[in-house]
Length: 119
Length: 419
Image (cartoon, rainbow over all chains, first blue to last red):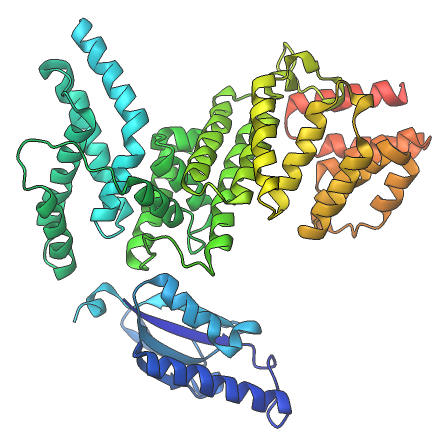
């Protein structure tokens, strides 16, 4: 099954750039992404620019509404996504738990829609 | 007429004995689609209700039900067979359906299937209330209306809750398998947690107005026996079973003739079920012998100490307080501390218990927890602080939802404070 891991964290949480903790986390990211790549389960992974750069589009009653920022005002910012193809939810959760931001942010595990699953 | 009675009895027996194995086997053949398996199993029983009274009970009811359920599932998949996955599952089923004469159902893997079903129904990706409902429906074989009644909700609401849960199992890819060894203890604990919740729900309700809910206690014990049968060396599964049996042994003594709750202290110990106590104690011994202690075993040990005391004053409070201390180290919570304080007060005097209570951080949740106020009231009264006890009793009464329990608490207050 294909799942998207939606990675989030609060902008102020996690180690600050330039600290040894930040470097250690970068190493962890490198390790887990390398492991995921070698496992053959990875389909795609991309980091996103900050939420300040996001634009949300909606059409209501035929009127197009364009607004600044992400869809929902949440404390946690959506900063990256990874799409994987693994046996089942338990396997997806194993990868989710390995993401370094999981200790101070969160990883949402969402199956791709059923149309995306076949093929 | 007698044929109809015979058919009704056979259906009831088949439901009791075959529902879970049938559902578990089907779900296995259907790639873990518990929702479809449940629908097909329910349709097979509906067919039995329609056909057995007229045509007679088949010689092998289990095999008959399996064949019918499998065909209903095939029909369903045929209707929705636009996707390759549905076709795959259909082929699996049809391979098993080659014979036209119903063969005895293959039950060699059924224990494994029931275990898988249990892990799926109790998967942490499902909401806790959905886990409880699914477990009662799929493994307990309760009707949706019964599950709804047990949780004081409407059948429609419960039906929707179950549909949502089954849809998530399928769409999110919740696996139909026994978890890997490194995850197993945590996942087994998840199952035990659900069973404990079912029991607690029945236990609490049995002092209230709705006696139907008492069945939940029996159901929880049955489910726990199943876990022990499937995982015979899991010490916490044994611990929970022992705990439930030892607690259930006191059931008839817990309420008086009018259905009012009777505190442990005042219970007629002659009404405790000695057979259940003996079984619970033996199972606890087996668990402790395996040398992997855990919270349920400690709670069972506490229940065993109560069970072996000939009367309240002869209870080994020192030992009980020590066990609550152990429990507190394993799974710290204000609830455990409150119980430990009550035991310490019995062993060493009310001031010792009150000193422990003083260390609890009273947040909103603790302040709304009735036993916190009831225990404080009791200990303050015994320590001679009538005024403090009065305030605490009043708060405890305020927080008691059940009329019966409120009355019992008032009686307690009158007895201790005398006004």
